[in-house]
Length: 144
Image (cartoon, rainbow, N blue to C red; front, side, top):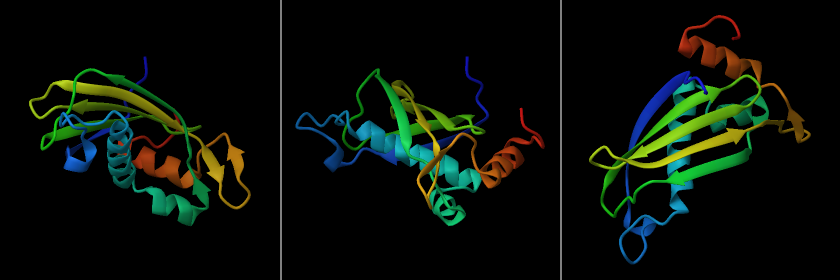
């Protein structure tokens, strides 16, 4: 079982352009909702996409797994709970999306690998600055 290292909760509104003719959020938009949560988590760490690029790295998504439990509806304010699971060799993030009344709508997980932007070389360890900022945030001074 994966250990949760840090979690952020981010509310978001299900907009009209997110829904189908039945006013239910289209399934493809859940990946967008994950990105909302992932950006909030990375910003809290202090290593968002702008910092990654400035540091010379990009983090393409390598896997996404989603489990749909119940629907989100137009106008609803949902919440995405985004949890960091791994950070040393890759970014592994777990997501739970809750409906406005607190029921689980979706469970998901994503994995991103580190790539050096200058030569598109895949790296098997995350940048020292990311590791340092995560460990400062979660309160450890050493690798686990």
